[in-house]
Length: 405
Length: 68
Image (cartoon, rainbow over all chains, first blue to last red; front, side, top):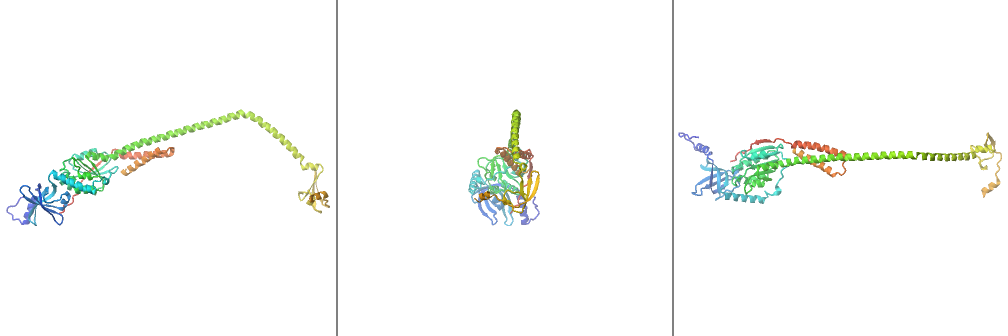
C-alpha cells in the first residue's frame, strides 16, 4: 500500500497502515532473551538482545503458540525467533510477534532434547508396557506427512492391495513451524474413524527434526485413541515422537510393510489350512474305503460259511435219514405197548367181564359210607343201565374193624 | 467382508484343522460337514484377501482460529 503524501492520517489509521505492511516482513532473528514475563492470560512478553552491540527488540509470543514449543523463555537463553513485527496501538510500541521459537545452536538443541527425554522417560511415556499393538487386519489408515516429498510415494507404492482406506493430511514436517501443522493434523484425525495413525517423514538433521521432539506432540501421540506408527528417518538421536509411538520404524516403506504384515500372514494361513483340511478330507475317503473293503471281506466270509454248512448237511444227510427211521420204529413199538396197556385197563372191558359200576349223582360208589338206605342209585352195565334203591347196607365187619384199628 | 469376520473365519478354520488332528476315529459324516464348512470359510477369506485396490484421499486439517 502506498502512502498518500497529502493525506493527514489519524494515529490509529497510521498504525493500521504500518501493520498492514509490517505483516509481510516475516523473518528469523537470533538473540539472547533479556527480560521475560508472562501476562495474566499466559502471553509472553520478552526482549531479544543482540550479543554484539546490545540492540534490543520487544517480542510477544501468544500463549497458544508458546505452549507448543516446550522452551521456557528466561534471561540469557539464546533463541531463534520466527515471526513479523507489529505496532501495538494502545502502547505505541513496536513488537516482534513470534510464530515459533527454537533454541539456537546444535549444542542447545541436544541439551533440550536430552532434558525433555529424561523428563518424559521418568513419566513412563516411552515404557514398553504402555505400547499398544497394531490391530490385526487394519483397514482405515490415517497418514500424516508432507505431500511434496518422496515419502508418501514410497508409502503408497509399498502398501499392499488389501483394500486399505487411506486418508492423508498434508503437513509440514520440518522446522519448528511444523509443530503447529502436526498438532492440527493429529487433532483432525482424532475426529476421524481410523484403525491406525501413521506419521512419516524422511531422515534429517537434529535441527530439521526438532519438531518431532516437541513435548505437546509427544503427549498427543501417547493420548491418541488408536495405535500410532512413527516412520521418521533419523541419525543418532531418535525423535521423541518416534519413541512415544506404539511402533517405531525408520522408513515409510517399513511402515507400509508393517500394515501389510497381518494381511499377508492371513493369506498364507488360509492357504496352509486349505491344504491341510483337504488332506484330511482325502483321509476320510481312504478310511471310508478301508471300512468298505473290510465289510466286503466279512460278507464274503459269511457267504463261505453258509456254503460250507450246506455242503456238510448234504454229506451227512444219508446217515441222518437212517437214524431217523430207526427212531421212528422204536417210537411205534412204544406206542403199541401203550395201546395194549390202555386196553387192559379200560373199565368197559370189566363190564363185559360181568362187573357193573354203581353211581350216586354221577359219583362212583366205592364204600358203604357213600350211600344211605332209600337212596336211588344208577348202575352201568355192559350193554345199558338200571336204577336201584338201597334197601339195606351191610358193612363188612372185618374191614370196619381194620378201620378202627 | 469385515476384517473382524476374516479374523473369525481364520479362527474357525484353525479349529476345524485341529478337529481333524485330534479325532482318532474320524466320524465320516461329521468330517464331511466340517469340510463343507471349511470350504465356505476358505472361499470367503480368499475373497477378502485377493487384490483389492486401495482408496486414497487427501483431507484437510482443521486449524483452530488464532486465540489472541
